[in-house]
Length: 477
Image 1 (cartoon, rainbow, N blue to C red):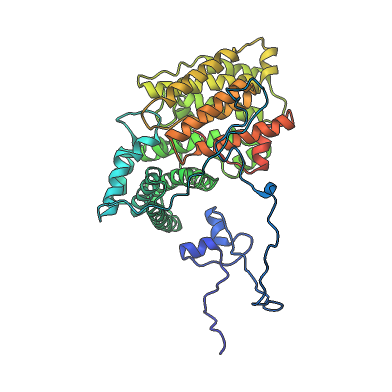
Image 2 (tube, rainbow, N blue to C red):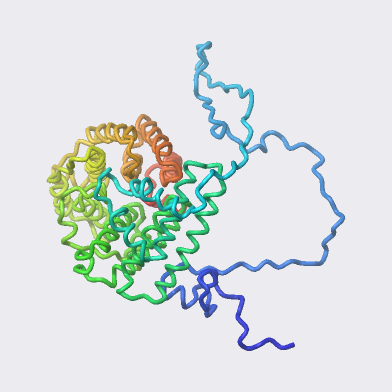
C-alpha cells in the first residue's frame, strides 16, 4: 500500500512535537523555532544492527576489580582527612574510621493531602513561595499583588504557579516522588499554553505572556540547576524589544516583570567573557530605560537601587570595550558609586543593599586597578571585604526565607584568593544551601570551586573564560 501524501512526518523537531505544531523539518533549526527564538532539537535516531547478535552469550567478570576503581571519595563520605588526631601530636593527616554506612532511603509515600491538590498548591504559593522571590519581607510584593490576580484569568500563569509551588514542596519532602511528578505535569501544561499564546502574539495578551515566562523562568532556576532559564530570559528580551519605554513604565505588570529580568540580565552579562558578551548583547539586547535607572532608592525586586545595578552594567560594558579603557570613564563610575547610600528601613533589605554596595566597590577596584591608580583614586578593599563577610553572616542567620545576593558571593570569591576568604565563602555557600535547598547556590558553590582549582593551576586565567569553556550560565541575584 502506498503512503498517503498527507501523512504526517515523524521527522520534526522536539519543540514542535511538544507544542503540537507543524514543523518544516529544516535542520539545524526549523522555521518555527527560528521565528520564535527558541531552542530547536531533533531526536537522535538509533539504529539496531540485527547481525552478529547472540542471545546465548553471557560475559562474566572473572576477577574482582581493584580498590582503586571505586569512585567514592572521602569528600563524598563527609570525611575530612586534614583533621588532626587529638591523641597524637603528629601533623600527618589521618583517616577517620567509618563503622557503618547509612542505608539509602526508599521514596516515602506521598503525604496525606486534600484531594483538591491544586487548591493546596495555590495556597502554598500565596503563603510561602511568593515570599521567597524578593529580597525583603515586605507587604508590597508583586509576586502576590500582581501574579495572583492575573492567574485567575490566565490558564498559563495559573499552571505555572501550581508547578512552581509543587517544585517548592520537594524541598520539604525530598524523598517523595509525588511532588516531582506534579511539577512535571503542571510545567508541561503551562509551557504548552504559553507557546500557544506566543503563536498568536498580540499586545493585548502581553501581560499574560510575560508573567508566565517570568514564573517558568523562576521555576527552571530552582528546578534543574542548569542554564535552561536563559531561554526564558532571551524570550523576555525579544518581547520587551517590541515595547517602548512608556508602555513598560506605565504598566504595573510590565514594570514588575522588567525589574525581575533586568537584574538577572545585567548580572549574567557580568559573568560572560568578551566573546559571549557581544554575542548575547547583539542577539538578545535588553531594553535599557534611562528613567528607570536614575532611581537611587532601594528596590525590593533588585536587592539594591536601579542606579547601583546600572553601575554594575557600566563596569561590565567598559571592561568588554574593544578600545582602550578611558580612565575618565572609570572616574565617573567611581564618583557615581561612592555617592550612593543604599539604605532601607526593612532590616533584611538593608542588609542586601549594603552587601551589594560593598561588593560593587570590590568589583570596581579589582576590574580597573590600573585606571584608578592613574587617577589617584583608592578603594579600601580590605575594609569592604570584612564588611561583606559580616553581612553574609547576618543574612544567613536571618529567619526570613527571602532571596540571597548570590552575585556578591561570586565576586568576592574571584576577587580575593586568600585561604581564609575561601573558607568564609564556602561556609557561606553551605549555610545558603541549608536555608535555600535546591537553589542556584548549589551550582554556584561548585562553580566557585572549579574557578579556584583552575586558577591555582593556571594563574592569571580569567574566570569568565573558565565559565565559557564549561558552558556555565549562572542565574545570579
